[in-house]
Image 1 (cartoon, rainbow, N blue to C red):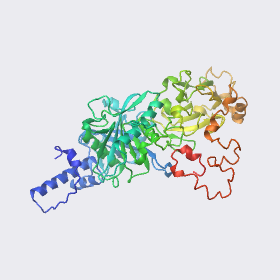
Image 2 (image 1 turned 90 degrees about the vertical axis):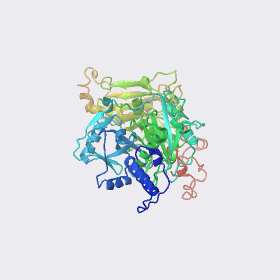
Image 3 (image 1 turned 180 degrees about the vertical axis):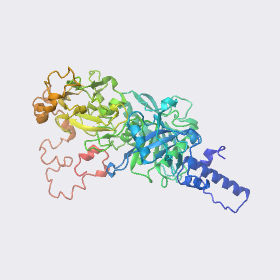
Image 4 (image 1 turned 135 degrees about the vertical axis):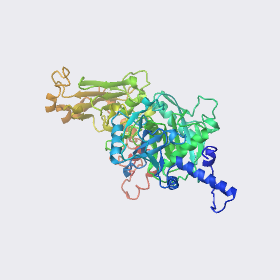
Length: 628
């Protein structure tokens, strides 16, 4: 009974009442259908149904792998709705081979091993020698799937093998050219689904009906027109709305119904059910003709706390509730598919770098004009012809003029947009000018300042957590005008990065940045930089910069005088309609109200009435609104 009508069995919606004492042929037929459906679902969705299979097998211990005895390792990254809750934001799963899943591809299960096995697996993935989506876990002959997890045999010695060496073709992090994306609207067995039509969902993702800021428009803009998202497969004219088998109900969008309840099943079981239902509907494997596939769920009821999640260097992302339409969430999740890790902020948290879409992003439908930070920009390669590699141990003094990525296409400049500062270790630094204009106009932190980012590993060329270290400038949202890295690259010598000028009055706007390795005037610093540059500097490496870095900078901060100090920075941050006439003694506390006439008559009653914090979806607006 596995062969005839798999899809028909999965779509059987009627509640079946069976009398086991009734041996009438019609009742026996119903019993066969029910048993077949149960066994089929358990083979694809091994949760509570797996327990039935286990019992039928006499307590055999779940579903053992039958075919290749290997699986592709995938890292899963979650976008937590409330990061302060401290939920785990990463997991390791294995995407099974179709031969182990009755011909269905793309099904994955969290890996369950002992402490030594999981530590070894994480070490291999973090080493840079192996990566999510590119390595397979071998030796799984005695592994089994039970309760929605892949259990490793206790004695298994963890070994990974590169996918490329097995001639396994996969659509990995392709970030240029045409990118066909399929969006799937999901309805559960109880009819739970997003209220938006397929056409509306398509507009929110592709902008097909005029949505001003969406995944397609933002990736096209941030990539400087190098990445073009398409509504499904537009190359095959025989398809309906870019979807096979007549399943496209809107450009790039299809709908499926799963025979499970969102309110009772965990996310892994739900995802595998959707993956199975899509393949049944289109008659093809996943990802197949698509580079990315996005699942849109009505909400989350079990194993929640996430707005969305995606698989690193892979094809799938999943969204729950309203978050599918938030451009910032879309670009964040596709960033994970592009092999980008999270971006942490000055507070040391995982994704609080609000200068980057890989930090906690903009939560709004039409507020999403923002790109990635310098580390991610270096890794993704969109600006590779406008980058600079600086090794301070070779070139200890260097001054560079930067432009923002939004001005990359401006023909009046060939200045770099990203600088990689080579440490000769894996945790390099990256510097960029965070110009808040154009495709980056709704940037959420550090507008029009120079940002310094450090990666945890992989030299900025592979998957690695990045961390915001400094926001440099003279006014506005800054940490100072210079940043000193002591013991740079383990050399014992300090590197000071300082801003000489920021000029917003030119086209394009520019930032001039100085790099000083060790103290200026160190005798013969370049004759043998790897041996002797640290002797004098370690005793007094930063006489001028560390004691008074801002005095020398503020005395002569710019080569082009007045506009560079504060041309438009503070006005764009703080509204100036009324406060400019009666300075900022009280308006700075609640600038958006007009409280200067009677600001303190009854202050305890007004604050909760004025700012409607829950309605503010843009985090920068929230942070700049008194009381939120």
